[in-house]
Amino acid sequence: DGGNRVVCSGCQGRKDLGFCMAHSIAQIHCSHCDLGRFKVVCGELESCSLRNRFLEILTDIHEPDQAKEVATVVDIIQIPAFLCRQSDLLLAATAAALATGKAINIKKGQFLAPWDMAEVVKKVCQAGLDPATDRLWLTERGTSFGYNNLVVDFRSLPQLRALGCPVIFDASHSVQQPGGRGSSSGGQREFIAPLARAAMAVGVDGLFLEVHPDPDHALSDGPNMLPLDQVEPLLSQLLTIHNGQLL
Image 1 (cartoon, rainbow, N blue to C red):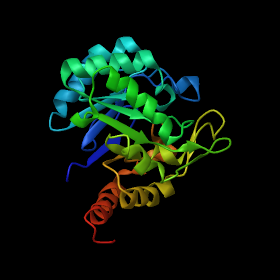
Image 2 (image 1 turned 90 degrees about the horizontal axis):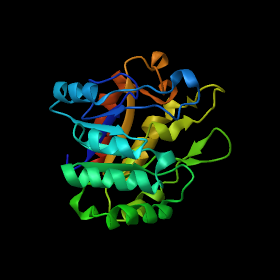
Image 3 (image 1 turned 60 degrees about the horizontal axis):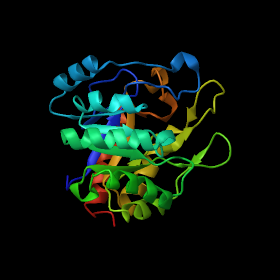
């Protein structure tokens, strides 16, 4: 609606939810080794793409040599927050996006100020991808605040927008508690909806949600996942805010 985007994800194994489907090809940054290395070959991504051809597909990459092959299958190449300043990865993703006409979504590192993303955007622009094409997105996913905790400074949303890129708000990972359970990350899913409503009121171009029919039994990110039956009511509220009826 009006160019807004909704990215729905269940990082491991879900392929049938949302308007833009997010999928992780390698969960190499998980807290516990048993959750890591969830590999999805491009053949499976291609199958996912064919089954969901009415949806756009997003996946993250972690190594430069993944960019070219992944870009032939997905619609949006995502750069993870922890890797958002890695020049080789950014340049490989940009080259792949330029060659295929695909978009790039870069998650702001939890350790960065919003204005620090200017240098990240500059790297991609110098490699040839113009933000004016609407194919370079920036995602706010919270900022580290002490140990095992993230907070959202909503001033970052207009500051990121000032860089000339569409801004996505990740309402799920913003409530994550990294490493909060010792061997895995925790989360406070009860704050997903309030933060999403606040972001929409401030002004964003899209929303990223982790969703699952039974979050407590999800393979990863369960504590910061929104139950599937709560998605439609929340999106209805967000559209109302977007349309200005609550302002």
